[in-house]
Length: 193
Image (cartoon, rainbow, N blue to C red):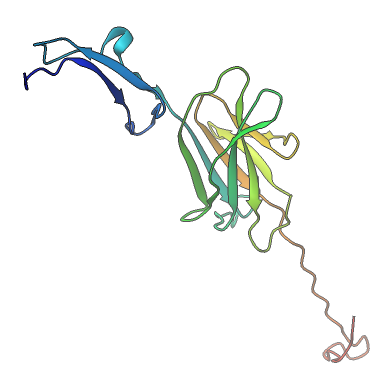
């Protein structure tokens, strides 16, 4: 009978709505009985999405305590890692580069359990800033809390959204002006330092 759609079928989610994590690896079995054209995916058959974790990082050109002239910084690259409870990398996510206001965002990440966590590394430091000088802070209700790196990885999240602020030490600059102490209006030329 061409109308008979009975049997076991598998439904696999291909994407989830914004801010929810889709389990893209699990297929849900659905059994249809003869002459029954509908079934409910409720109870133990329900496909349930958990809220995905969102990590938002903004890179700044000056520390959070400096408000004058503070702006965002494009061109920093950050890599996100899924870490085991003992600090081993379980998964590496594609690197993202700050742009359009110094921001990167890792979205729809699964909530972690069993002391696993997400960690970030700055993998490319913008020109004009000291490599390996990253200062990273969680930002909540206007309060900046420093994060300490563990073996080069900054632990940032497990099962809740987090907002981060990042800053690097600028490379130093030096200016040397040579003056004539007798005739202070003249600047001698040709000196080598």
